[in-house]
Image 1: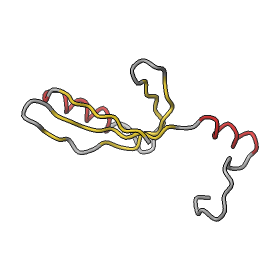
Image 2: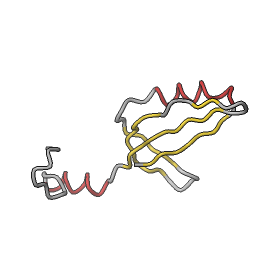
Image 3: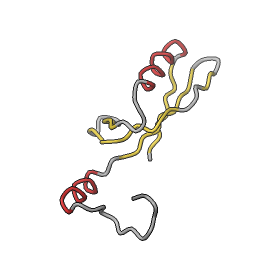
Image 4: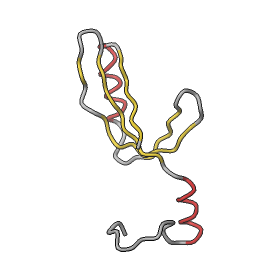
Length: 89
């Protein structure tokens, strides 16, 4: 799980909130942090907006999609971890 915080001018928060509300949970998205390259993630949600006198603050939560796990599951046809009654399957 990753969370990133956005501190923005008050007049931009509505557009930013609308942008992130356009995603479904858990929609696969690409995140590029500081131009390091795309990271495959699932969108998990946004926090409520915090209003300050000079700016607005919002937090976005995503979960990294581990491609190696997905590839292995597809290759062998079973989950990549050993499950002992975990209740997830």
